[in-house]
Image 1: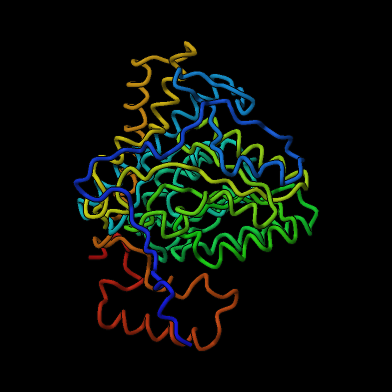
Image 2: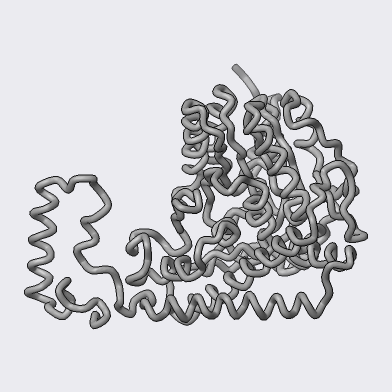
Length: 431
């Protein structure tokens, strides 16, 4: 067949709006007035939420006041607690980057600008709801009271690391706080969370599950498998998709952002969906509480898109100046979550600049104390690690015979070749 009169096909490759050195204009980002979005009943049909998948739920307005039906009407004490937890998370991040630059750990990932997505979520859920986080939700652990020193021990992979050096830095696990182990394999936590939620429903329990994924990772097949199971079995789960505009060095368009919102994926699966201002702590709290109440009343799962911005690099191994304009973070139209909540409390007459400065000094001192305590247990590459024999522990309930033989042989050879590293020696003397 002769096709000479037909146009040639062309392949579309997404391209970010701004590259290094470009001026930035976020005029294309639609920011609706705070309080303008309706709040349907938690038990409503999923289709009633679908217009909200294309909108942006906001509570805090330009006047620093809370507006509209999504206002959770939190008391000042709760708001101050939320503010302190976000400030503590940011102080922790800043200190961990410093120790990474000092060579005390290999790797770190900050959550600067995204603190509300984790801290407000933690406060909106029940303390025993199981959460399956990704790698930028350190605010969850801090908000649920996981000790800072244990977090630093894990980052240093030292002798007090509860995971015994078996995980990358920042991939914590806190069973007592109902926080599932963080995985470096992206999006795997979504089907795990849905499966846990299904099991909770089968048992007739009252606890729900919640999970996190970045917009880039939502392009993984695990994301779609999880939503299929959640929809089919009406799993009591809250699926948080944090759209911070960048997945490592590729912008959100490679995950589908040019076509529609990420919350709109809920429409295709027939589940509830919300798109929220992820830099508005009150909007985050209200949306997550709404979704949690919906799941707990057997009304089904909810996909929440937290529309936010990754202020700094993907990790300490990343230089965002190589692929995006330096002006983006300062021009982001939704502001900073800590600053916005601070100004809201000041507008309420419950806060002031002096109290804020004192709080910043207090959280910085708390982080410094945790780092000093962890450094006494060792830092990466400077000894004071777990005994050699622990590499065979915690894998099987009963260690198979061949691994028993291997462990005995390995420990014997270690004692012969490197007696100063033997398990009989004090680990504090390890070189």
